[in-house]
Length: 252
Image 1 (tube, one colour):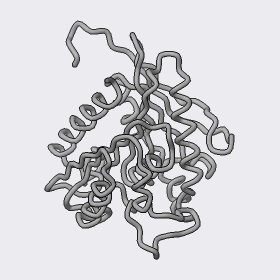
Image 2: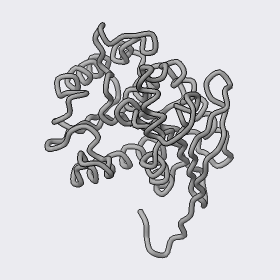
Image 3: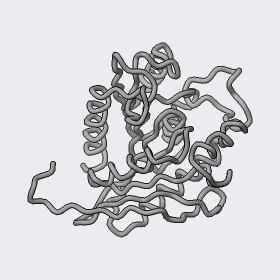
């Protein structure tokens, strides 16, 4: 809660961090200035790339009192505009799940070693990043909470399995740890409402701590303010729910 007499400040910069396998990659870090300790959030960018939108999302978390880091998952594929690099990554079938998990774990550990970190960390992702976020909740033990926004391919059939994505994240639901917030548009096609239903059924069957919010009048990527798919009312409400969820899970 902000009041007009409060001091507010942040540091935001591109840094270098050790990623999967010890490879040096770059990341965007934003952290508040003030009295900590602060919880952490690792942001997983979407397939459109490590772009300006995700830098703004990273600063938004810092504005709300979180130490936030967004690793460049495409660093190993070269540099250029986010669109050009993402096109190259898309042409080779994306990045391998193992590599992404290693980068995310390293990013979480980077935050945890900051002197004013409170020891609690969440992961946030949209689209392919939503899938990676849920997968991280199933495979890694560094995240207390997961925010999955319209995670495509959380539910995968056999025809979608490949060398880089060798398992459907939904098949690992029993291994999910921590708490999950799911944000979905009911007009989305990936995931479509039936896939979201199945995702929820599996979570419920395993008695996992989760809550889903599903929005009418919204499709895929409805909080991407820089695109025609943006839906103002649903986006604003989803951000309120995201911060309420994270405040409850990471500050208590």
